[in-house]
Amino acid sequence: MHCIEQVIWYKSDGTAHLTWTCSETDCSTCVSTSDTSCSSFALTLFTEGVSRDNLIHVSDCKYGSEVKLAKIGQSKKFAVAEIAMIGKLGTHFTYIYTFFLQMTLG
Image 1: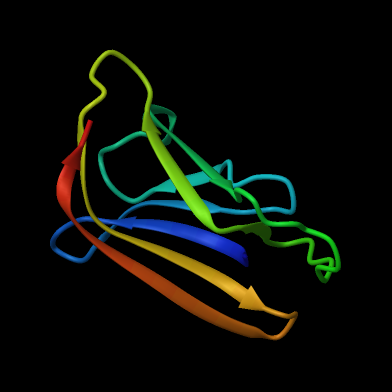
Image 2: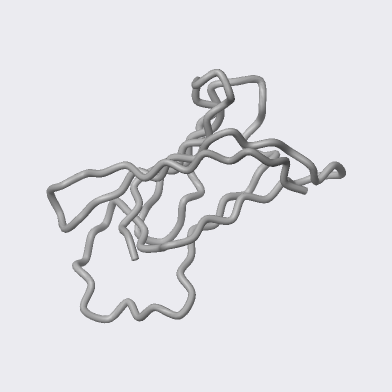
């Protein structure tokens, strides 16, 4: 389980598409750097089957191990080139996990 500060969706040309910033409770604060509206997508950070017992309290990130990105509206299809999760290890060290995807999600 990781304490995630931001989740960034990159376009295939390497520019940021949408960026979500996480708090202790969710990752709902979104900024768009493209013509896509944040209100068109919902991002959920969650953990399945892992206990949150004995975790360090950190207010500016959310603990989780999985990301769900969903399209809101009539069309449910969208393409993702890369997702980056920026997180913390303890309270001082920041790291980045990057996932390159080569599929269209529907």
